[in-house]
Amino acid sequence: MKNQIITIIVSALVSAAVAFAVVRFFNTPNEFTVSQVTDAVPMPDNLTFMGETVPIHNFDTRESLDRELQVNRLWHSQTILMLKRAHRYFPVIEPILKENDVPDDLKYIAVIESSLMNVVSPSGAKGFWQFLGGTAKDFGLEVNDEVDERYNLEKSTIAAIAYFKRMKEKFGSWTMAAASYNIGGNGLAKFAGQQKSNNYYDLVLGEEAGRYVFRAIAIKQIMENPETYGFAMPKDELYQPIPYSVVEVDSTIADMADFAFEHGTNYKMLKLMNPWLRSTKLTNPKRKTYSIKIIDPKYRIVETDTSLFVLPQDIELN
Image (cartoon, rainbow, N blue to C red):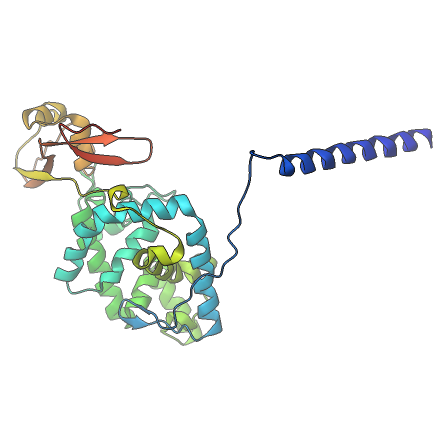
């Protein structure tokens, strides 16, 4: 009994101390504070994605989109960085989409796949469009130890378009083609067959596939209306396109660093401009012609912890 009483007393003292510390922490001026966003997410009355109507009047569609708008609206750092990168990379992607007569909204698939970065997934998918090695080769991309065109934005965008066109023909809608990019054509066909529907918005899919298209729609809505969703982006904070020239190479490059210096740049800048070059050399046994980007010598790239800035040589970054 005595031990029980001591235990109760000690527990009470500890609880009181913790409560006092918490109250003191949250009531101490000029220290850590958290502001909460309490206003409702703006929900459009009408919405299209890839030229197709989003059935926003359906409660499940509306609530699914609401979820993705909330997540991306409040995930400030990631959404801000995506907005900044889009200013540099959308001007590369958009003309290719237009030239190949596919919806401009396909660019938002690249955003949700990679946040417009040359990332590598746990499954080994790589680049802006997150191609696996086998699929990349199926759609005409070169993948080996020296060249990996999954990291070539122009060529991987063309390969992604070929995939989407094939899936559009298979399923009859761009929305379903987009969904197949996540779950795969065979996987989506299985669900569609079981549920007797080719309408993405009417299908019961897994957690990731069920959210996939809604994530793209939410990102489109935020990127097209950033201030509506709380993202005021000064133009000088957006990442600028990097000026470059192109050198055509149809022979061996024995040393990439030497090649870079010969063309007025350095190894790091060469790799930043051409991430698809994966080695310190290019043997090129088939004598293919490669287009290698060289940063304009009038400009330089200044790297910080979070971004790359393009500046004229005579301008310093404060």
